[in-house]
Image (cartoon, rainbow, N blue to C red; front, side):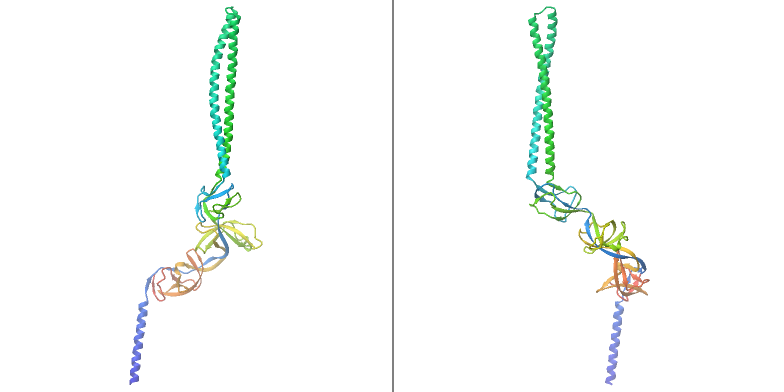
Length: 389
């Protein structure tokens, strides 16, 4: 009797426990309003991978044109600048002295011109007076010639007038020579000033070389010399690059003839988590005999660091693949999963992913094509949940 009672009790407990589990499971099933996407197989290119490096399109080592000590470096590594900005400055005592000397020559020439102007005014005034005296003497001389013919004056009186006339004529000629000489001196002073200005201009050009100007908009890639060091022509102080980036990739010689200018590449820069489409703009005709690679140049976006490692993907044929939206794939622990709509219920499928292209990712295994999967917002979905599209 006791044994029968015990069996009845155990059966009741099991029955109650079973009902409880069933109720919990029913409570856990949730309904989700979702959007679906049909899984289809599509032809995708087969990619070959090439390693590469981000580079500035224009990369220049900046050196001074004159010898001098570096007094200022106005831009640090990584700082951007505009065309015409003063990148760094050098100090040259010799150039400054030459400039001061040239300026003194210009001042001296200006003074000589002022003096020659004064001399010319004096000479022109003397000529004016000489001309007036000459005109008076000439009139008197001609009048006395007529008087002499009429024997109205003595020979001695005529001789005196004639002598005054000749003196006035000589004075006029002397004044004219004085004016010509003053003009010549002024011309010489102007020539000296032009020479002084040319010397000053040359000195100013060299003085301008002490401020090293940016040849284009860009960024400082590397500082090679510190302030206080002696700089000289041919000794780089800064390495700069333009704001426009390019990518140099190194391609095996087996791809010769397969890549062409204008072909599209897909670039991945894993260090900054960026990917983008690129076009080949240049192809080197030479193969490196050591690496058996040749170099290609392709376009790049500007907001990636110069020197970053890149992977270029080049389409080489096609394959049949399944691509789904990235938003449809979610992580459960270390596994990638998607949720398939099976009769209005969620069926969790573990998938293996491949390459990501744009907003889609390749499914290598786990789906066969033809399924209908949840497109996004899958974090709270679990197997068995009800799906409403």
